[in-house]
Image 1 (cartoon, rainbow, N blue to C red):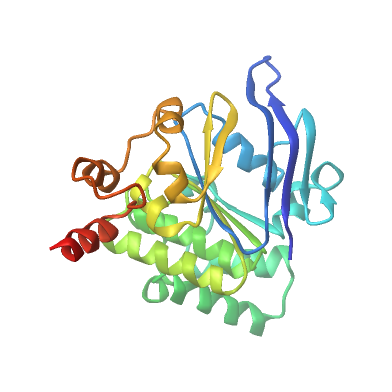
Image 2: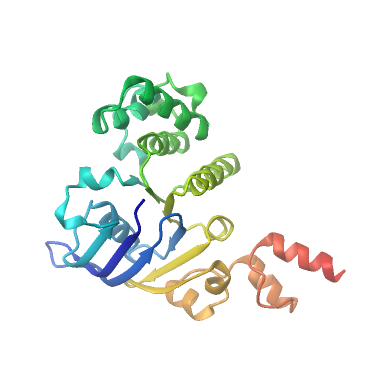
Length: 269
């Protein structure tokens, strides 16, 4: 099991553009964390450094006791699984089952019985059991995202990084995502998610990290973050509907979700 530590991390591209500036944060094993912020805030570059897809130009990234600069991306990816925003960036095989089994077979070199067990479990959890023989490129984008997620689940890393998993998902897809993240949490896995979906973040994650202008500007619970007007303004994030409505009705500063709003309205009669 691996805690994550980013210690005064910056990343600058070869053209001189600084994408992340002096970010420090720690994430304990088993946490569910959402990272919010507008495009260009530095979110994706930050999480790519956790997976070693990008190496910091300053500072250090620790995955457990491993300094990522001392390891290859392939070595770190066994502990930190990354699901790209566009699943087509990481799907290469002709069937869903082949795609899901690839990591356990080629990277982990597991016995065939274990490969089959892991792959079937991942397909069941992601709702793909009935589509295991289909070509993933013939499936809708929303389903291909679950193919990419299933492939990471089958490799069973300690840490999961999801980049905009809700994009293009309908209600059924969002429910499946919630089920997956809850299951991973029960297994003691760490889940780090970049998202623009504020409602998804509120309902699914216990910790919110807000980024703006290449830095972390706030780190706290959903209640702390979404009642902090200054932080939301700096990050150009909308105040959730439930928070705005609760203020208009003078229902207090603790309501964050629609369910809490309805419960408080009913309680007050």
